[in-house]
Amino acid sequence: MRNLKHVKKSNILLLLTSLFVTCLLMEIFFRYVFIQTNGIDVTLASQKWLQSYWKPINSLGFRDGEYTKDYLAGKHLIFIVGDSFAAGYGIKDIDKRFGNLIGSRLGNSFAVLNIAQRGWSTDDEIAALAAFPLKPDTVVLAYYLNDIEGAARKYGAYSSDVDGIYAAYNSPSLFHSLRRNSFLVDFLYWRLYPLTIEKNAGWWRWVRGVYDNKKIWEMHELELDELAFYCSSVNADMYVIIFPNLLDIPGSVAITDRIATFFAERNVKTLNLAPLLMNMKKSRLTVNSSDAHPSEFLHAFVAERMSSVIRKAHGLP
Image (cartoon, rainbow, N blue to C red; front, side):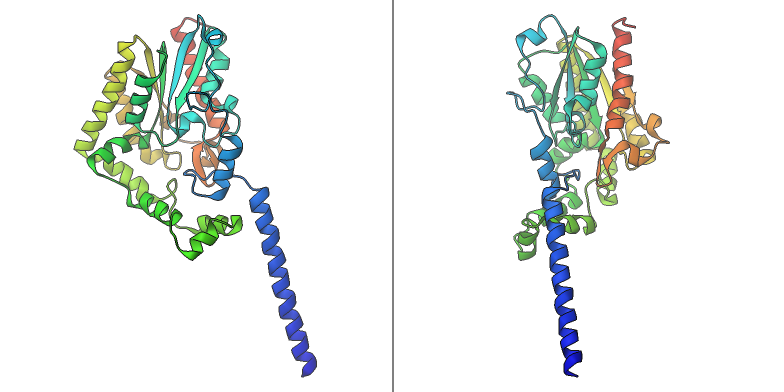
């Protein structure tokens, strides 16, 4: 009996030691090796990604190079305007963003400037263009379906699911204090957490409902008209790239078609990606399984088509 008790204690001690070592090794892996975006910057891994790859940041605060007088002199200025899609969230090398790729395809007669920030809505983009020290010859707007959120907030409409995510993220509880200090616990928590802004059906249902709200849509129309008016006021050509929800492209069609129709009625050329991407695999279109931002493949896909449109407009082969 004494031998059996000794064996049991030894086995328990061995098990606990193995678990401790395993957890320690996993913590080291997730702290120093694993780095991945998750779409809304709530994970420690995504924050580490930003620290490592969200650069360069120029003197104007954008993720882009400096716009020197020598670089800009005599060139046709193209502004890439948008949110995290245009800024290249999830893309480590800015030269692989669609804006930079467009620049490389157009050649030295063009200068492509990135005016985009994570979390921007249409009202933010209008303000940024008005405050920017240079005027564009061409504006390429990267439109994503949550660009209407600025108008929704003005109307007082908020997504409870998004609020829930940030409430959990900022929770002062003991567990969340542990999560904020353990890369392993943080990884497991956000993988098991049932709500993420990119995948959550409730958030997507909320977005569709916002577009169906007549008053919010009218406010958003005014924003889009103001953006188009800015372009015409500075004699800039305007193009719009319309991104669908990459996790539900069929469910996006009603909205992407509405945006395409809105701009077509104002003689603005659009690249509506929904029909082009309909039969492609989500894994090919998105950064990773936890982040539905465009992948390098999709950035290259967009750049090829948009640069072709611009070259044709300028009579280039």
